[in-house]
Length: 290
Image 1 (cartoon, rainbow, N blue to C red):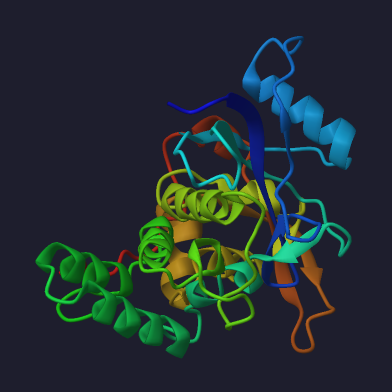
Image 2: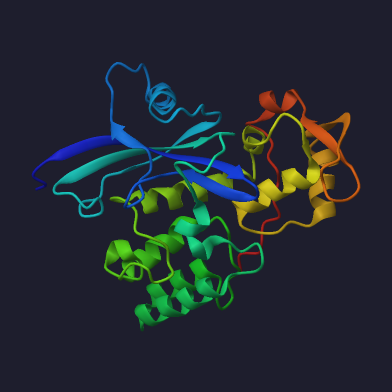
């Protein structure tokens, strides 16, 4: 039996800055914002908002509970640590205290095609799987090999497979091997969970407006979605979906001239989007799964 049980709150707080998804994390090894549960908060979500505001100076928009992690041996501590994790989105910018998500999960950025690193890791996972049929199928599915396509939302499945195969620093592989730094305790696993949840959520809830300024160009909106999804979107299909099929945005009547080319029309999210956030999303094209 574990000798002790500790409980803490861990937050995956994401933003987008100049086309790069950023996560609030700092320290050596990098750590997500985390700390003990505070009994005076009326709810965990309210506690997270207050705690993040007071400790990090960051106001959160969208907040959603992720998962409660309680595996023995995954926290780097003696005994069992119960980590209650949350995903939060913010418009906060800046270099201090923020890291590029793809520096921590470098195989996940497929905006220019599935990266060579991901293909290499898939092959290494296959060698680890050996003749085990279940492991082989998991590796092919996670890394888009054989009859499977690459699926951006399978972030956690890929990380867990790499951990089991001993290919990341947290599970014994030496650090500095091009796979990103080990994070504190199980924080990289929690980050993978948060990115996976957000990529899935973009399919059915318009949470992207939580990351955009009040006025924006459609090109800027698409770049933000692509940065988080880790995949490119067809320009005309994206605009037709956002403008016509879902009616998420409306023109402001103003233009953005600092584009390096022709002035671009500025848009804003319709006020109804806030009320409809549980019913519609950006409808990213879903790749075939088989």
